[in-house]
Amino acid sequence: MWKRTRFERFLEIIPGTLSLVVISMPIVLSLVWPAALVVFIILYDFYWLSKSIMMGGHLISAHFYMNYEKHVNWVDKLESLNDLKRLKKDLLFRLTRRLKSFRRNILKDELATLDDLIKNPKKIIKPKDLYQAVLYTTYKEPFDVLYKSIAAVADSDYPNDQIILVLATEDRAGEEAQVIAKKLKKEFAGVFNDFLITTHPDGIVGELKGKGANAHFAGLQMKKYFDNRKIDYERVVVSIFDADTRPSHSYFSALAYKYLLHPDRIWHSYQPIPLYSNNIWQVPAIVRVVAFGSSFWQLMESTRPYRLINFSSQSMSFKTAVLIDFWDQHIVSEDSRTYYRVFFKHHGQHTVIPLFTPVYMDAVYDDNSWQTLKNQYLQKRRWAWGVEHFPYLVTESLKNKTIPFIKKWGLVLRLLESQVSWASAALILALGIWWPFLLSPYFKTTILSFSLPYLAQILLSMTWIGLIISGWASISLLPNRPPKMSRLQTVVVFISWVLTPISGIIFGAIPALDAQMHLLTGRYMGFWVTPKKLTKGENV
Image (cartoon, rainbow, N blue to C red):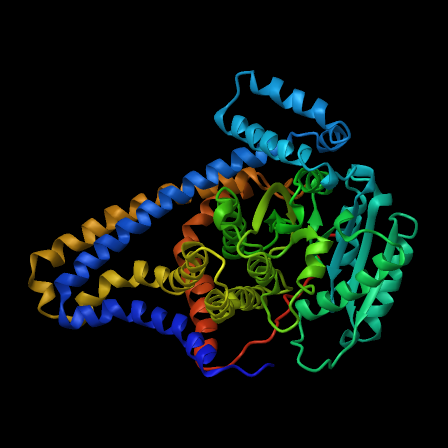
């Protein structure tokens, strides 16, 4: 663990302090100025009503994009890159036809990017010359979980002889992890161009035991591998996946097309939609809501690429990974930190390209419900530990004089606002209205005390518009129902969204506040690995 400066330590205190101030505001106002609290609660509820409707709109938009990309023949699209002039004529012709506005916008963006590529012939890479390195980081995940993930890679529509599978193991995981790795390599012998196993040594000074350190070591080994084979780093796109990540059938073809189409591809990263649906039918209802909520947030962010940040599974040019010295081995949230490092390395000229072709992951699951809920809380707290980026963003923004002021400080404020909202919004929406009734005897005698509950109820009930949209979207994204499960279970999935207020507090605000209090008090968190296992009855 590196030593913080006093300024960095001061910055670590800010997010948690702001969250505590916002959460305590209703309590303080209830005691000193109840009328002001009423105005605050009404405005706050109206703000979240507007935000709920807006997010519902983004979710619907994302659904259309996802449905569109689902029906694209990415193998044919990839093949079209062998004749760029013909591809341009085809795009121009398609634009002459009557199309829905979002499809027209997709084609326009594609055409503009293609024109940039044609103007930079040195940046053209033929599809047959592109390698895809698929990096799975693993600790103590069982054989069956890893097998299903790697089998999904093998089953993709991308040529397997252009895929290099990299299984990054940990020395501290013991001999069993090595046995599993060797068994997997034997199972997939001859399937891929190559199957590499790296073993991250334990006890490297200054490293944090976690995914980032493992991936960093694997990156160094991959660099040696490509150097020995004299493969240009830009001809390699690397995808880093968790052990349970199963890419969709067309993921790699879609990634390859979008990667090769961009002439400035090394300053882009590529973000798929993580759908936590591998075991969605078997997990408790409240965990199902949390899982879909995480996927929906990424879906909504993907329709706003100007603010899209890498999360969990992601892809980028291997050249980019080399330029930033691979993944950060000192922090927990290495996924989003990768985005920030490239952002500052290239003076703000870094964009995440959304891939609406999903990857499928596991919702939190354990053998008993209590342990499942406990693990869900710990996972959300680890995700909320992304608050650790705040001091880094501030210090880097102060040092970098090239990035426009609004762009870099907008990034800082967006992170701060999201963290404070994460820790406080659900608590204020659920409890804020009750504080004046509990703490101010005078307030109970006012006219406001009679009208406030009704007004707040009307405003908050309208937020159910967003929940109804979420319920509809969750049903549309469900995998096939297990044979022994009744159709009624689909209705249960929809009804489960009534648990949103509870999940928002237990698996939203509280773990976020917990993480911020750890940072505020200097109790730095390590990397907690979410246990991975197949659900009962699921076989390899």
